[in-house]
Amino acid sequence: MKKTFFLCLVMGLAALGAQAELALEVPLIELKPKPEDESVSTTFVFHNNGKKPVTVLSIDSACSCLSADLDKRVYQPGEKGVGKAEFKVSSFTGRHEKTVHVQTDDPAQSQWVIPFVLEVPEVIKIEPKTLQWWVGDAVDAKTSRVIMTGPEPMTIKGITSTRENVEFSFKEITPGREYEITVKPKNTSDVMLGALKIETDSRIPKYQRQMAFFSVYRKPVSQQP
Amino acid sequence: MMASLVQAAVLVAVAAAAAVLTQQWHPRAPALYLSEAPLAKDEIGLKQVQERWQGNVLWLDARPEDVYQKAHIPGAKLLNEQKFGEQLIELLDVLQTTKLPVVIYCGGEKCEASRTVREKLLSVVPLEECYVLKGGWPAWQAAQP
Image (cartoon, rainbow over all chains, first blue to last red; front, side, top):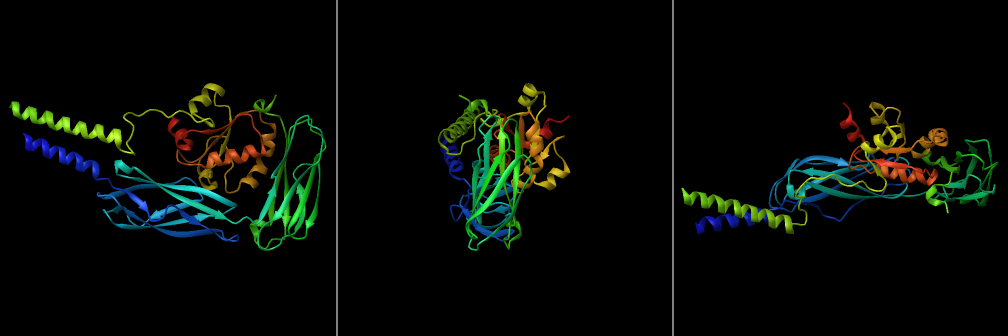
Protein backbone atom coordinates (compact mmCIF):
# COMPACT_ATOMS: atom_id res chain seq x y z
CA MET A 1 0.00 0.00 0.00
CA LYS A 2 2.74 2.45 0.99
CA LYS A 3 4.65 1.40 -2.09
CA THR A 4 1.63 2.11 -4.35
CA PHE A 5 1.10 5.53 -2.76
CA PHE A 6 4.75 6.52 -3.18
CA LEU A 7 4.76 5.32 -6.79
CA CYS A 8 1.64 7.38 -7.54
CA LEU A 9 3.12 10.43 -5.83
CA VAL A 10 6.35 10.18 -7.81
CA MET A 11 4.40 9.72 -11.06
CA GLY A 12 2.18 12.68 -10.24
CA LEU A 13 5.12 14.97 -9.49
CA ALA A 14 6.97 13.71 -12.54
CA ALA A 15 3.97 14.57 -14.67
CA LEU A 16 4.00 18.08 -13.22
CA GLY A 17 7.65 18.58 -14.08
CA ALA A 18 7.57 17.07 -17.54
CA GLN A 19 6.55 20.23 -19.38
CA ALA A 20 7.43 20.62 -23.00
CA GLU A 21 8.29 24.09 -24.11
CA LEU A 22 9.14 25.55 -27.49
CA ALA A 23 11.21 28.71 -27.11
CA LEU A 24 13.16 31.06 -29.34
CA GLU A 25 16.90 31.64 -28.92
CA VAL A 26 16.19 35.39 -28.95
CA PRO A 27 13.45 37.39 -27.20
CA LEU A 28 11.89 38.44 -30.51
CA ILE A 29 12.51 38.30 -34.23
CA GLU A 30 13.35 41.56 -35.98
CA LEU A 31 12.71 42.18 -39.66
CA LYS A 32 14.17 45.29 -41.24
CA PRO A 33 13.34 45.66 -44.92
CA LYS A 34 14.86 48.42 -47.06
CA PRO A 35 12.50 51.16 -48.31
CA GLU A 36 12.33 49.61 -51.77
CA ASP A 37 11.74 46.01 -50.60
CA GLU A 38 8.41 44.43 -51.46
CA SER A 39 9.00 41.58 -48.99
CA VAL A 40 11.64 40.42 -46.53
CA SER A 41 12.39 36.90 -45.26
CA THR A 42 14.27 35.53 -42.28
CA THR A 43 14.97 32.26 -40.50
CA PHE A 44 14.80 31.76 -36.76
CA VAL A 45 16.04 29.07 -34.41
CA PHE A 46 14.15 27.61 -31.46
CA HIS A 47 14.40 24.66 -29.11
CA ASN A 48 12.10 22.28 -27.33
CA ASN A 49 13.28 23.01 -23.80
CA GLY A 50 10.78 20.64 -22.24
CA LYS A 51 10.96 16.97 -21.40
CA LYS A 52 8.25 15.78 -23.76
CA PRO A 53 7.97 15.69 -27.55
CA VAL A 54 5.85 18.52 -28.95
CA THR A 55 3.68 18.19 -32.04
CA VAL A 56 2.82 21.33 -33.97
CA LEU A 57 -0.88 21.31 -34.85
CA SER A 58 -1.24 24.57 -36.74
CA ILE A 59 0.36 27.96 -37.34
CA ASP A 60 -1.71 31.17 -37.52
CA SER A 61 -0.49 34.67 -38.13
CA ALA A 62 -2.10 37.70 -36.56
CA CYS A 63 -1.44 39.59 -39.80
CA SER A 64 -1.89 38.50 -43.38
CA CYS A 65 1.32 40.45 -44.05
CA LEU A 66 3.35 37.91 -42.08
CA SER A 67 3.64 34.20 -42.77
CA ALA A 68 5.75 31.61 -40.97
CA ASP A 69 6.56 27.95 -41.31
CA LEU A 70 8.54 25.45 -39.20
CA ASP A 71 10.89 22.77 -40.55
CA LYS A 72 9.20 19.85 -38.80
CA ARG A 73 5.98 18.80 -37.15
CA VAL A 74 7.32 16.98 -34.09
CA TYR A 75 10.18 18.23 -31.90
CA GLN A 76 11.82 15.89 -29.41
CA PRO A 77 13.01 17.14 -25.99
CA GLY A 78 16.14 19.27 -26.47
CA GLU A 79 15.74 19.28 -30.24
CA LYS A 80 16.56 22.39 -32.25
CA GLY A 81 14.08 23.65 -34.83
CA VAL A 82 14.29 26.19 -37.61
CA GLY A 83 11.48 28.41 -38.79
CA LYS A 84 11.09 30.66 -41.80
CA ALA A 85 9.13 33.88 -41.86
CA GLU A 86 8.19 36.24 -44.66
CA PHE A 87 6.84 39.76 -44.29
CA LYS A 88 5.10 41.42 -47.22
CA VAL A 89 5.88 45.10 -46.82
CA SER A 90 3.15 46.63 -49.09
CA SER A 91 2.29 50.07 -47.69
CA PHE A 92 3.52 49.44 -44.13
CA THR A 93 5.89 52.01 -42.70
CA GLY A 94 7.33 52.50 -39.24
CA ARG A 95 7.48 49.99 -36.41
CA HIS A 96 4.94 47.19 -36.20
CA GLU A 97 4.68 44.43 -33.64
CA LYS A 98 3.08 41.28 -35.01
CA THR A 99 2.75 37.74 -33.71
CA VAL A 100 2.55 34.23 -35.09
CA HIS A 101 0.61 31.68 -33.04
CA VAL A 102 1.74 28.05 -33.04
CA GLN A 103 -0.81 25.58 -31.70
CA THR A 104 0.73 22.47 -30.12
CA ASP A 105 -0.52 19.23 -28.60
CA ASP A 106 1.04 20.13 -25.25
CA PRO A 107 -1.58 21.20 -22.71
CA ALA A 108 1.10 23.12 -20.81
CA GLN A 109 1.89 25.16 -23.93
CA SER A 110 -1.09 24.76 -26.18
CA GLN A 111 -0.13 28.00 -27.90
CA TRP A 112 3.37 29.25 -28.54
CA VAL A 113 3.39 32.92 -29.51
CA ILE A 114 6.33 34.03 -31.67
CA PRO A 115 6.82 37.82 -31.46
CA PHE A 116 8.05 39.78 -34.47
CA VAL A 117 9.07 43.41 -34.76
CA LEU A 118 8.93 44.87 -38.24
CA GLU A 119 10.81 48.10 -38.85
CA VAL A 120 9.98 49.59 -42.23
CA PRO A 121 11.94 52.78 -42.92
CA GLU A 122 9.72 55.80 -43.36
CA VAL A 123 10.80 57.89 -46.34
CA ILE A 124 7.85 60.29 -46.34
CA LYS A 125 6.18 61.64 -43.25
CA ILE A 126 2.91 63.60 -43.49
CA GLU A 127 1.92 65.41 -40.32
CA PRO A 128 -0.92 65.49 -39.64
CA LYS A 129 -2.13 62.86 -42.06
CA THR A 130 -5.71 64.12 -41.63
CA LEU A 131 -6.85 67.72 -41.42
CA GLN A 132 -10.08 67.90 -39.52
CA TRP A 133 -12.94 70.34 -38.98
CA TRP A 134 -16.17 69.76 -37.10
CA VAL A 135 -19.47 70.61 -38.74
CA GLY A 136 -20.17 74.27 -37.92
CA ASP A 137 -16.51 75.19 -37.25
CA ALA A 138 -15.06 78.44 -38.59
CA VAL A 139 -13.84 78.01 -42.16
CA ASP A 140 -10.15 78.35 -41.36
CA ALA A 141 -7.24 77.07 -43.41
CA LYS A 142 -5.18 74.26 -41.88
CA THR A 143 -1.76 72.96 -42.85
CA SER A 144 0.07 69.65 -43.11
CA ARG A 145 3.82 69.18 -43.37
CA VAL A 146 5.29 66.69 -45.80
CA ILE A 147 8.81 65.73 -44.73
CA MET A 148 11.07 63.55 -46.87
CA THR A 149 12.81 61.54 -44.14
CA GLY A 150 14.57 59.03 -46.39
CA PRO A 151 18.19 59.25 -47.53
CA GLU A 152 17.26 60.66 -50.93
CA PRO A 153 15.45 63.97 -51.48
CA MET A 154 12.03 63.90 -53.15
CA THR A 155 10.00 66.57 -54.83
CA ILE A 156 6.22 66.99 -54.83
CA LYS A 157 5.22 67.12 -58.49
CA GLY A 158 1.55 67.87 -57.91
CA ILE A 159 -1.49 67.40 -55.69
CA THR A 160 -5.08 66.64 -56.64
CA SER A 161 -8.17 66.53 -54.44
CA THR A 162 -11.02 64.02 -54.52
CA ARG A 163 -13.45 66.85 -53.59
CA GLU A 164 -14.13 70.12 -55.33
CA ASN A 165 -15.38 72.05 -52.33
CA VAL A 166 -11.94 72.62 -50.82
CA GLU A 167 -9.18 75.04 -51.73
CA PHE A 168 -5.66 73.74 -51.39
CA SER A 169 -2.10 74.71 -52.24
CA PHE A 170 1.41 73.57 -51.43
CA LYS A 171 4.75 75.29 -51.10
CA GLU A 172 8.35 74.19 -50.77
CA ILE A 173 9.94 74.89 -47.40
CA THR A 174 13.25 73.08 -48.01
CA PRO A 175 13.93 71.86 -51.55
CA GLY A 176 13.49 68.10 -51.80
CA ARG A 177 12.97 67.78 -48.05
CA GLU A 178 10.01 69.68 -46.66
CA TYR A 179 6.73 70.94 -48.06
CA GLU A 180 3.65 72.57 -46.57
CA ILE A 181 0.13 71.83 -47.78
CA THR A 182 -2.67 74.25 -46.94
CA VAL A 183 -6.31 73.16 -47.11
CA LYS A 184 -9.46 75.22 -46.58
CA PRO A 185 -12.98 73.86 -47.01
CA LYS A 186 -15.42 76.15 -48.81
CA ASN A 187 -17.86 75.58 -45.95
CA THR A 188 -18.27 73.42 -42.87
CA SER A 189 -22.05 73.19 -42.93
CA ASP A 190 -22.11 69.59 -44.13
CA VAL A 191 -20.15 66.42 -43.60
CA MET A 192 -17.33 66.05 -46.13
CA LEU A 193 -14.63 63.40 -46.36
CA GLY A 194 -11.91 63.75 -48.96
CA ALA A 195 -8.36 62.94 -49.85
CA LEU A 196 -5.38 64.70 -51.39
CA LYS A 197 -3.36 62.58 -53.79
CA ILE A 198 0.25 63.70 -53.56
CA GLU A 199 2.47 62.83 -56.49
CA THR A 200 6.24 62.68 -55.92
CA ASP A 201 9.30 62.04 -58.07
CA SER A 202 10.46 59.12 -55.87
CA ARG A 203 12.40 56.44 -57.75
CA ILE A 204 10.54 53.84 -55.66
CA PRO A 205 7.13 53.28 -57.27
CA LYS A 206 5.20 52.80 -54.02
CA TYR A 207 6.28 56.23 -52.78
CA GLN A 208 5.32 58.02 -55.98
CA ARG A 209 1.76 58.46 -54.75
CA GLN A 210 0.99 59.42 -51.17
CA MET A 211 -2.28 60.34 -49.56
CA ALA A 212 -3.45 62.82 -46.97
CA PHE A 213 -7.06 63.18 -45.85
CA PHE A 214 -9.38 65.98 -44.79
CA SER A 215 -12.70 65.71 -43.06
CA VAL A 216 -15.57 67.90 -41.97
CA TYR A 217 -17.50 65.67 -39.62
CA ARG A 218 -20.10 65.59 -36.89
CA LYS A 219 -18.48 65.99 -33.49
CA PRO A 220 -18.97 62.72 -31.56
CA VAL A 221 -21.28 63.01 -28.56
CA SER A 222 -18.42 61.81 -26.36
CA GLN A 223 -16.39 64.91 -27.33
CA GLN A 224 -19.21 67.42 -26.91
CA PRO A 225 -19.28 69.58 -23.77
CA MET B 1 -11.45 -6.60 -2.51
CA MET B 2 -11.40 -3.91 0.16
CA ALA B 3 -7.68 -3.35 -0.36
CA SER B 4 -8.21 -2.87 -4.10
CA LEU B 5 -10.92 -0.30 -3.48
CA VAL B 6 -8.69 1.57 -1.06
CA GLN B 7 -5.84 1.51 -3.53
CA ALA B 8 -8.13 2.82 -6.29
CA ALA B 9 -9.33 5.56 -3.97
CA VAL B 10 -5.73 6.49 -3.16
CA LEU B 11 -4.89 6.63 -6.87
CA VAL B 12 -7.83 8.95 -7.52
CA ALA B 13 -6.89 11.11 -4.54
CA VAL B 14 -3.26 11.43 -5.66
CA ALA B 15 -4.29 12.26 -9.23
CA ALA B 16 -6.75 14.86 -7.93
CA ALA B 17 -4.07 16.33 -5.65
CA ALA B 18 -1.66 16.63 -8.60
CA ALA B 19 -4.39 18.30 -10.66
CA VAL B 20 -5.21 20.77 -7.89
CA LEU B 21 -1.52 21.60 -7.39
CA THR B 22 -1.11 22.17 -11.12
CA GLN B 23 -4.19 24.37 -11.28
CA GLN B 24 -3.07 26.42 -8.29
CA TRP B 25 0.59 26.97 -9.05
CA HIS B 26 1.25 26.32 -12.72
CA PRO B 27 1.80 29.67 -14.48
CA ARG B 28 -0.09 28.58 -17.59
CA ALA B 29 -2.84 26.55 -15.95
CA PRO B 30 -6.01 26.52 -18.04
CA ALA B 31 -9.33 27.74 -16.62
CA LEU B 32 -11.31 25.14 -14.67
CA TYR B 33 -14.36 25.85 -16.81
CA LEU B 34 -14.98 27.46 -20.15
CA SER B 35 -16.70 30.80 -20.11
CA GLU B 36 -17.27 33.42 -22.75
CA ALA B 37 -14.72 36.19 -22.42
CA PRO B 38 -16.34 39.61 -21.90
CA LEU B 39 -16.37 41.99 -24.85
CA ALA B 40 -13.59 44.56 -24.96
CA LYS B 41 -14.64 48.22 -25.22
CA ASP B 42 -14.04 48.28 -28.98
CA GLU B 43 -15.64 44.87 -29.64
CA ILE B 44 -19.11 43.75 -30.52
CA GLY B 45 -20.56 40.27 -30.91
CA LEU B 46 -22.86 39.03 -33.65
CA LYS B 47 -25.62 38.68 -31.08
CA GLN B 48 -25.37 42.37 -30.17
CA VAL B 49 -25.28 43.35 -33.86
CA GLN B 50 -28.63 41.60 -34.26
CA GLU B 51 -30.14 42.83 -31.00
CA ARG B 52 -29.11 46.48 -31.33
CA TRP B 53 -29.34 47.08 -35.07
CA GLN B 54 -31.07 43.98 -36.51
CA GLY B 55 -27.86 43.31 -38.47
CA ASN B 56 -28.19 46.65 -40.24
CA VAL B 57 -24.58 47.85 -40.05
CA LEU B 58 -21.83 48.83 -42.46
CA TRP B 59 -19.50 45.82 -42.58
CA LEU B 60 -15.83 46.42 -43.35
CA ASP B 61 -13.64 43.44 -44.23
CA ALA B 62 -10.04 43.86 -43.04
CA ARG B 63 -8.77 40.61 -44.58
CA PRO B 64 -6.51 40.42 -47.64
CA GLU B 65 -8.19 41.09 -50.97
CA ASP B 66 -7.89 37.51 -52.27
CA VAL B 67 -9.82 35.99 -49.35
CA TYR B 68 -12.36 38.84 -49.49
CA GLN B 69 -12.97 38.05 -53.16
CA LYS B 70 -13.62 34.38 -52.33
CA ALA B 71 -16.29 35.16 -49.73
CA HIS B 72 -17.34 37.95 -47.41
CA ILE B 73 -20.30 39.11 -45.36
CA PRO B 74 -22.97 40.29 -47.83
CA GLY B 75 -22.51 43.99 -48.51
CA ALA B 76 -19.13 44.20 -46.76
CA LYS B 77 -16.60 46.65 -48.17
CA LEU B 78 -12.89 45.90 -48.34
CA LEU B 79 -10.60 47.96 -46.09
CA ASN B 80 -7.35 46.34 -45.02
CA GLU B 81 -3.97 47.43 -43.65
CA GLN B 82 -2.12 46.64 -46.87
CA LYS B 83 -3.93 49.12 -49.12
CA PHE B 84 -5.61 51.26 -46.51
CA GLY B 85 -5.22 54.65 -48.20
CA GLU B 86 -6.35 53.60 -51.67
CA GLN B 87 -9.28 51.57 -50.35
CA LEU B 88 -10.36 54.33 -47.98
CA ILE B 89 -10.58 56.79 -50.88
CA GLU B 90 -13.05 54.41 -52.53
CA LEU B 91 -15.10 54.32 -49.31
CA LEU B 92 -15.22 58.05 -48.59
CA ASP B 93 -18.56 58.56 -50.33
CA VAL B 94 -20.16 55.72 -48.37
CA LEU B 95 -18.68 56.87 -45.07
CA GLN B 96 -19.72 60.45 -45.76
CA THR B 97 -23.37 59.57 -46.13
CA THR B 98 -23.92 56.52 -43.93
CA LYS B 99 -25.53 56.77 -40.55
CA LEU B 100 -25.06 53.06 -39.86
CA PRO B 101 -22.72 51.77 -37.18
CA VAL B 102 -19.50 50.38 -38.64
CA VAL B 103 -18.35 46.85 -37.76
CA ILE B 104 -14.93 45.63 -38.90
CA TYR B 105 -13.95 41.97 -39.07
CA CYS B 106 -10.85 40.01 -39.98
CA GLY B 107 -9.74 36.41 -40.24
CA GLY B 108 -10.28 35.16 -36.70
CA GLU B 109 -9.88 35.49 -32.98
CA LYS B 110 -6.11 35.91 -33.20
CA CYS B 111 -6.21 38.37 -36.05
CA GLU B 112 -5.31 41.95 -35.12
CA ALA B 113 -6.05 43.51 -38.50
CA SER B 114 -9.59 44.66 -37.70
CA ARG B 115 -8.37 46.51 -34.62
CA THR B 116 -5.53 48.15 -36.55
CA VAL B 117 -7.90 49.15 -39.36
CA ARG B 118 -10.36 50.56 -36.81
CA GLU B 119 -7.67 52.78 -35.27
CA LYS B 120 -6.55 54.02 -38.68
CA LEU B 121 -10.13 54.63 -39.81
CA LEU B 122 -11.03 56.60 -36.68
CA SER B 123 -8.00 58.82 -37.17
CA VAL B 124 -9.56 59.96 -40.47
CA VAL B 125 -13.30 59.63 -39.78
CA PRO B 126 -14.30 60.18 -36.13
CA LEU B 127 -17.22 57.75 -36.28
CA GLU B 128 -19.50 57.64 -33.28
CA GLU B 129 -20.01 53.89 -33.45
CA CYS B 130 -17.22 51.77 -34.86
CA TYR B 131 -16.52 48.27 -33.54
CA VAL B 132 -14.46 45.16 -34.12
CA LEU B 133 -16.45 41.94 -34.58
CA LYS B 134 -15.55 39.44 -31.86
CA GLY B 135 -14.46 36.18 -33.43
CA GLY B 136 -14.19 37.76 -36.89
CA TRP B 137 -15.09 35.94 -40.08
CA PRO B 138 -15.14 32.45 -38.44
CA ALA B 139 -17.77 33.69 -35.97
CA TRP B 140 -19.92 34.92 -38.86
CA GLN B 141 -19.50 31.63 -40.75
CA ALA B 142 -20.35 29.58 -37.67
CA ALA B 143 -23.56 31.56 -37.19
CA GLN B 144 -24.83 30.84 -40.70
CA PRO B 145 -27.49 28.11 -41.06
